[in-house]
Amino acid sequence: MYRKQIKQIMKDLNKKVVFIVGPRQVGKTWLAKEIGKEYKKVVYLNYDRFEDREIIKNEQWLKDTDLLILDELHKMTKWKNYIKGVYDTKDKNLKILVTGSARLETFRQAGDSLAGRFYVHRLMPFSMAELSGNKMAVLDRLVERGGFPEPFLSNDIVEVNRWQKQYIDGLIRNDVLDFEQIHDIRVMQTIFELLRRRVGSPVSFNSIARDVELSPITVKKYIEILEALFIVFRVAPYSKNIARSILKEPKIYFYDNGLVEGDEGKKFENFVAISLLKHVLSRNDYLGENNQLKYLRTKNGKEVDFSLVDSQNNIEEIIEAKVSDSKLSSNLRYFSNKYNLKAVQVVKTLKREKDLGEIKIVQADHYLSELFM
Image 1 (cartoon, rainbow, N blue to C red):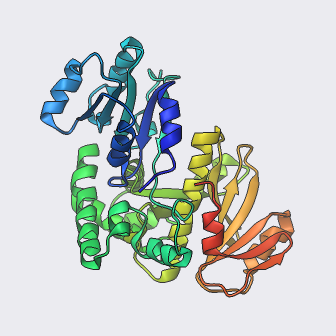
Image 2: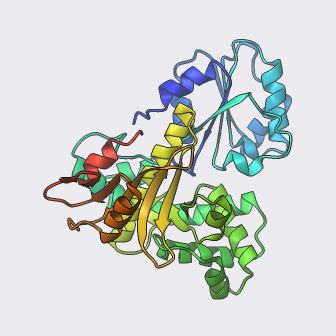
């Protein structure tokens, strides 16, 4: 399955170190090896393998290597200083590609040794903008299974269910424990399960803390670990006052749509969230922008699911996700009229689209297919 990032990654490899980061099993290693097919002499090394670890530490690849792929390197102590040393002393022909399933910003420290030496490409699950074919059938499968390659491409629903079970177990027992020492893994599993059931609703750390009998600070830390490992992402409420926005309750969504527990409405909203996040991150990575995904909520409870926010913290567009409701959302109308905002109601099953000036009611497969990536 072709991924759109390939051309840009190859272009960037000629200039700097390239990092491909993203969720576990989203296809980072596959993508790196596909890119490797375009080079004559490729060395692939995974830090999780003992034999490869020794080669990495001693820099024992051959001098004529033209592409060096380093997988899961962030697990190496002082990995950033290591990459800096390799990059600063490498032969001119050597390109360096690094992949990992943890966010690079998690490892940032004062005086970043890699400043100016790398590009980041965030690989997300499949989206409507990437896939061709019967758009409604593709959308149904993405909402139900998620956009991770193995479950999405499988023709066997039993294998999909088995993958899902093993994936969840691997996330908690392997990735989380590898990332940071957790004193009670059962508490982390409980928080994980609670979040699966609260998709689309503002999440209170205090409320979860009461449910699991921990301090809100510890709950926040555990959720930040899930964020750092590309398991969940938060969408904060929009505010011109950044400090106020931080204090307000965020919504939590999952990168894997198949992890969402609930009705079709929750699953569809989660998928729209992933699609919009991918759109925002792609514009940031490839156009050098600094956009954000937010949601809107007033003190009296009026709410719109999402807002696309530009580099100057201005709202470009507000979006409401609906499974089948063709009637215009009163909250969408309220925010659009009051603040003169471009608005879109994205509906999964819709007989006829409507253009109401600044507000549009559109079919989800059409709208999501037109996003940046």
